[in-house]
Length: 160
Image (tube, rainbow, N blue to C red; front, side):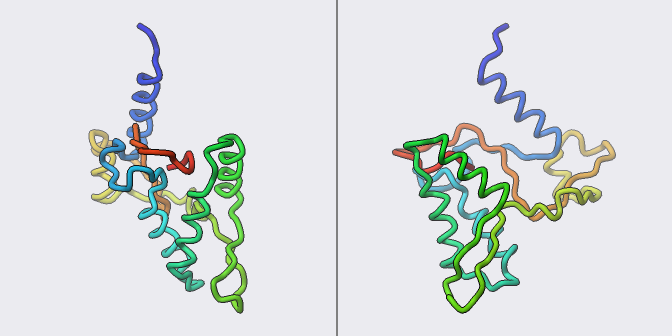
């Protein structure tokens, strides 16, 4: 039996599913055909994470535009830039110039090690393994396994 890219994808989806991550196909994600960034999730995360600093809708849109503007012409450089922003964060110049720049992190690293007992919503994600004693991560981050997203036209970045 030949091991194909499709079989690898299925194996990874299964392994992550066993860890409690839900899977969606690209068709399940409602967004414009050329969008590869799940902006609704990103907007919600940024608003909740930086509400203490009164982040504005315009500032959140600026972050989204910066992520979308990564060039598809040089994927290596674009992915390198994105990975640096993802791991290190970046400074956001505030709309109101009297406010200090805001340090933005696209992942909330502060709660990655906090485990909790699963609640009813988590058990829905865990599925068949719900009867086994488990602990899951309680996090503000949104994790989605999305396979086969459809990109119509020229995508702007290689991230989801």
